[in-house]
Amino acid sequence: MFSCFPNLFLNSVPRYEHELLLNSLLNQIHPYSVMIILLVTLAIVGILCYSLFINRIKGLPPGPPPLPLLGNFHQFEADLDKKFFEWKRKYGKAFTVWMPNPTVVITDYKI
Figure 1 (cartoon, rainbow, N blue to C red):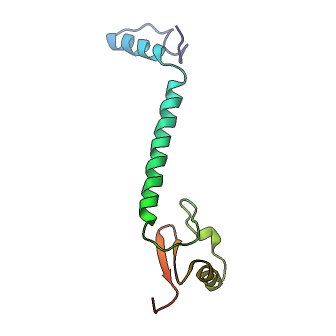
Figure 2 (figure 1 turned 30 degrees about the vertical axis):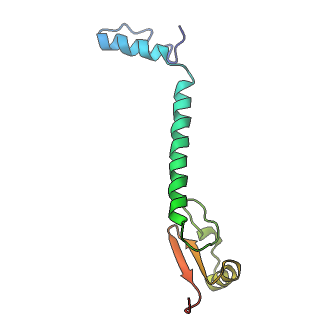
Figure 3 (figure 1 turned 180 degrees about the vertical axis):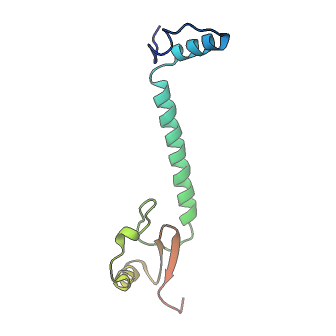
């Protein structure tokens, strides 16, 4: 029988019934099952985070693409006004900037 933990549990003599059960369970675990469970869990968490992000940006004006956790901080320059005018030309009179939460910037008071 193959074991993921060959030296950890096989050399010890079980004293109680629950130790026997634990030893048999650990000896039956397939070596890739933990990795598969971890990958499936990460995929589910990733899909949930992505769907929450998509639902969060619905209805917001377009804007520069943000980075996770940083937002658009990496795109800010020393002269923020120039960057906002550049984004105004590219995205329109209202655009969304992530700092890291969404902030709608309105560049025209007539909107």
